[in-house]
Length: 119
Image (cartoon, rainbow, N blue to C red; front, side):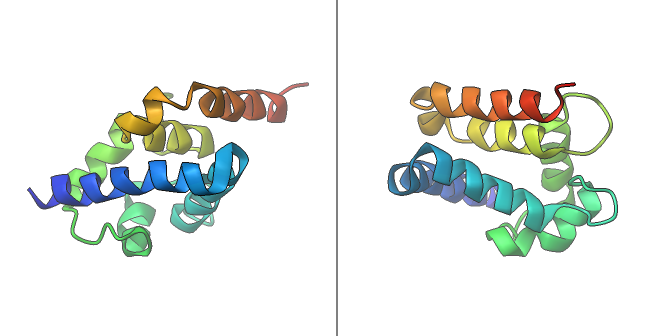
């Protein structure tokens, strides 16, 4: 039940942040959040780095199982960690209200990621 409460609180803040910061500002904040949570040596969010830094986002009440589930839910490439794109997509998915009204922001993130990997 604690995980659901923490998650619900987090979901409530994303739409507020989107309205206050706009699309680009929200993307910047998500990137900052990723940088706070990532393992500095590996450059991705691992279970260990999420557990170590979860209090920075007010998620200290989540169990190890909840944190592992978050990583697994967002891990699209199956490497056991979250890269920046996976993290941003996960944050949007955790906020249904934001997801409904933010298709353009998600497209922006994906386009940015594709540009970063273009040859």
